[in-house]
Length: 474
Image (cartoon, rainbow, N blue to C red):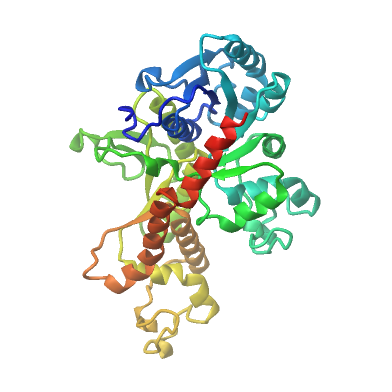
């Protein structure tokens, strides 16, 4: 049979109920709802416990049962300006109401018996609650397996002196955690840096104490990280992602544009878009286009917090409106990926210039190391062996008072582009076929792997079958 809410194949009911408890942030709620639809398609009845803070709209999911708990956050605690503080407060204030709610559900004989609880891994308090109620608990990790490897190693990394992170150590390899370098350690902003460490350690410990872990990833993408976690953990691991690829998507999007006060667009010219202005804090001498490199560098520094606040407010609104599918950012905004990643929002970078020029920008560190920068007139006709068929004279020349700042800027832009979920180019294939081919080969290969892994017989298909059988064994 088919479920009209998801348009995916649904098995007959199996007489078992699952209780799901998402963290009330969009980047966590959406994957949990997607997981609920996946498990509902395998025959399970779904009950979702949610907080009053950022509560989902039950009318959008008539095939699920919803139960609200009163966590009673204060106005200060219910702020998304400090996600770590919010998550820490929820882990304290949800304990009693969550325990009461699950107890009532367990005693309700009119519904299918509950097989297990599936909670967001950030809700580490659910480990003690489920143990007290003798209810099996599986956790959902909405982030990647590679990042979780780092979270599980935080106590050890702190003992070895990698934490707190020192700028002078960024390029040092962490020999105890190959292939990561110090710069790969997650940076999560909070008023209390120690609370970040405490929450991540509690999350890792709570995950290890669970009956299993569901990952929104797949074997072919994070094989080495998953293998390392299987070796470290004594519980089953189920990489059944990517979740969103199992559902049809709409081609119609609503558009919200976040912009600075500097050179602000005129909203009246685009009435079909929603505009949000953020303060950029530029001083009069900084708001000059005479030196674009300095302007970009200053904006990338001063816009971080206003942008984070604006995005957080949009996500709050999205709980009652259309969810945010992704962030599309100009590639020059190199800070935006880290901010969006903190909210678990996919980022797509747009390059307004050519692919060929970007390949040169992306190679700045290598070209500088090889002596091509600064450019010497005597070498203009030399071939750049690392970027055929370019010659030294083809390398971009950007006038700035601070060449070192230029190199740092483009290195950051390049690193963000590599970390993003995708790239949009203001170009077309016929004019830049060779350059586009180099960039797209890996993306095409990855897309093929995604389709294979969730298809019949693929790695995520088998993991989902194993997860279903595992839950039915409780």
